Length: 386
Ligand SMILES: [Zn+2]
Image (cartoon, rainbow, N blue to C red):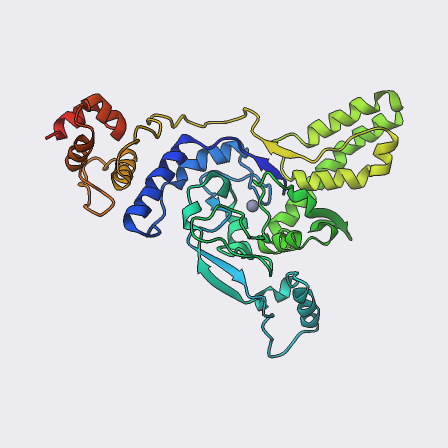
């Protein structure tokens, strides 16, 4: 896992957030069903170069959910009271109990002894760009699901509170600009395989690896092997250049790094640790060679992202009462599908009624001004203006 920097949010998500938070205010509570955040899917996928934010494997856009880092519907926490006891304990259970007491996850086989407690999810962050990542279904359906454990001393966010507040999430957030997942997860060669391990005993590294099965998913272990074989064969060319002398070493090193850290390559976290192990720090120091941690940044490489900006900016509401503003927010992003009738609800004010109410506050508003405010055609406004 590496840090990802996806740039600015797409306008479609801004509008979806505006609409759905207004709906929640009008309803007086969280939504019954979550819609609208899919507006971010294409942009997330393209800017992450179709790689899962967690495992760094390429995946098809259609096959991948828009992943909410903080789960939207329900969040499951670890009950730190202790692991459940098995009727017939295994010898490893004692080791797991001791690990758990130190805040570490039990090793694989003991993971089902963790007791989970449920609390409402972070529904108000369902349309928040910083909370969304493009992730593969494998990572989502590993152990993670709606699990979002906090360290023992953390204080969970209140409704509407902005993260991180008093939280100390044990799942690393690759989109967090304040920390680098590489600081917490280190790939190491263990016997004949490369697997991720917690760097310097990081608790968050340990839980992230366990929750996403980064060290046990057969598909991932196979992908690590495949990647290492490719890296090793590339390294032979560099080793040959090393043997030719120091004069071309720097250029050869830059070429190697550019190639193995190419943004669309998979498993750049593994690549970093492999390079660091194969050409260790003291050797690089001796030859004056740098090894930077890879970050996936938006580099203007956006394949197939359609413009979603066919809607007006979110202004023009000054001076109007709050509830009316919320009805306008819902109306201007919500169009009744062709051939269907709008279902009356507290979130939907019929258009003629909405126009009349706006005119009560802005008697001189023209059809064009109302059309802009409500994101409708002037002809539609004329039709419904009483
Ligand atoms: Zn994944």
